[in-house]
Amino acid sequence: MTMRAALSIALVCAAAATARAGSNELEAGSELRALRSPSAGALTDNSLGGGHLAYARSLGELAPGLELWIGGGLDFGSAEGTMFQTMTTSIDTFELLATARVRYHIYDHVLATARVSAGSSRTSLDISDDSGTDMSDARWGAIGRGALGVELASREHARWSAVFRVEAGYARATAPALTLQPSTPDDGTLRLPMSDSSIGHLDLSGPFIAFSLASQF
Image (cartoon, rainbow, N blue to C red; front, side, top):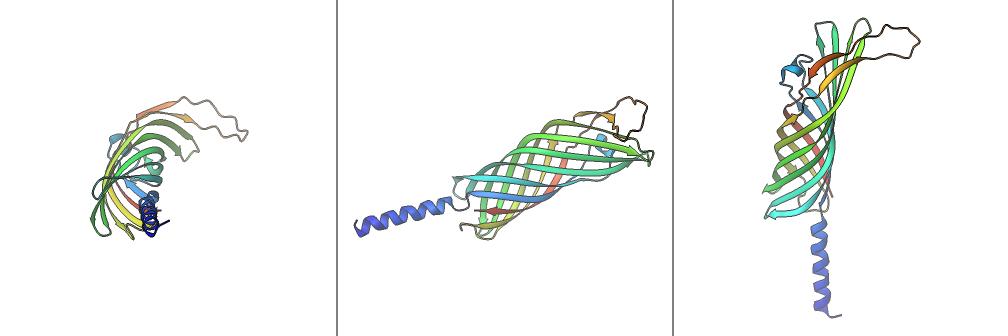
């Protein structure tokens, strides 16, 4: 093998290693969503707080400096409140999402980012009072998200990089119709049957802000 051929093979291998560097991402973070709908406001004055876990893979550059990433993840959140000063409410969500993200290199370690997500969301509601009565229901629905943000990357073109990400966006969720059903504890106590109570559609749409740490490798 000539020196020129060996050098050519070495350059190709180096280019391939560079292309693979940072093509995978694991992300974890926290999120706070403001609940603005009348149906959510009747149950709680608090925002929906929670976290998220996600994986994404780079599909390469769409244009110089503009990257496309696709992946998926899960989000979870909760909010508590009171009704009529005597009833305690608890809202919980669990979302399964598919995500597409674009990242644009602004300057050195600073990037702009935009993402869209869509998937399914499970909304559960529990209401209890001082007498020990507890009623709950849970339903699945659809959810879509859009967000814009900024990133700080420790080492953009290295084989491993840490990324701090801040995003602001809006989540649009379908409003499932919830019918509260009494919970019957298995304690041997004889209880009178209670009728189901419909509370209508619970809309958890609203603006959110998210903070994330990601590892790209």
